[in-house]
Image 1 (cartoon, one colour):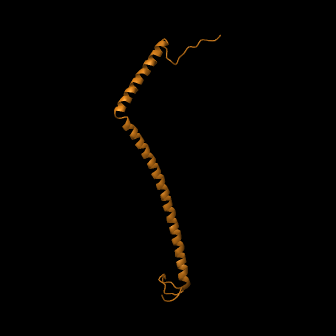
Image 2: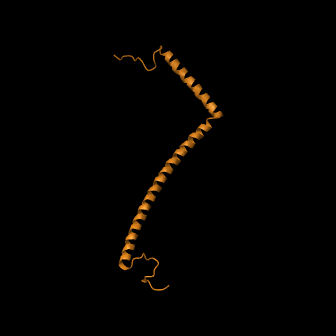
Image 3: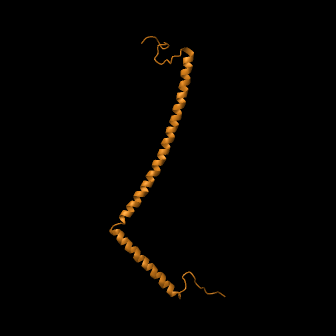
Length: 118
């Protein structure tokens, strides 16, 4: 290693000498810092948007898997039993509505006559 700290044989020279070379390196460094800060901000924004997209995608995937699980459970024998139970419950509900209608002298269920208080 020849020379000292201030020797001009450094491998960082840009072809300029003295004061103009230093100013040129300083300005180049400032623009490099600004460019790297801008790049870092863009990378940070990209990371936040990617995080949001992944969270939404994961939530939708969880919902999809839950719906698929429920449909798979009710697709076999349990589905057959549940379907028959719903059909029987619907028939019982229709019978109850019909008998209630018949008991009210064929008037619709919603129209009740109330006695007038005098």
